[in-house]
Length: 300
Image 1 (cartoon, rainbow, N blue to C red):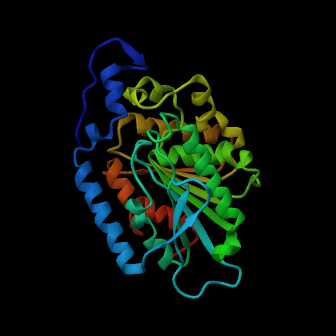
Image 2: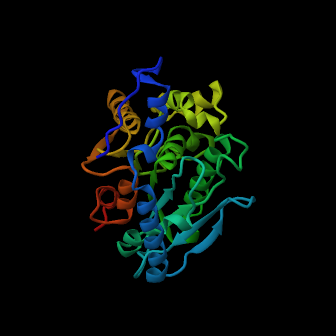
């Protein structure tokens, strides 16, 4: 694993100077094989569409970006509907799409679950604000849950999975979005959040503030760790030993806060995985994140 030495300028966050903090929120610094892994993910997503067919494209709202891909469970659906998993992609709030992440669907559909993969506006398209991203992700979860029967799904087996900045957005939806959308507190039966950010204070101090318009209101409202009391969903938090030090710390601190509040949570540390390798493992039923997702849903 590549080691990144902290420099020695004035401290801006804990024991980080500006360069070190910027590096700690720049995955490429700690995962130099990023482009190789993203290429594998793209190829695997194409193979998924070839193997299980093109997804249904469904609108969950009136604007262009409010769409999701639906891959339906294979085989005969149970009378009460198939379990449902909604995936929220990452990409530093700037990149990514449902099509780019189709690989996460294949293990689910072969295990008898419906796989929903969200599209939503990115931060550049939203003029630098992540608030519309939060609103769309929360709105999509509400739409899918409220329309479970339409998709042949079982709303009592509704789950979420997410990665990176998508894990942040999913954390926001599960800590405050469910209430904003007037969903039952226990609408989601479990979530697997992979290598996410759960407190925006240090992110705001990093170079990500060059393209995200952070404010005190945004930082407070969209930091899931500050709304632990509103979390009712059992969470499995996953990070890799090769994640950046801040992404590791964010996950561990969020897990510790959940434990203090006596919220159901599990921490998985994937030894030997960097950020992108761990995201890739969501599409592998034998990978650390993929296995955790199937186990949480009670699927083989």
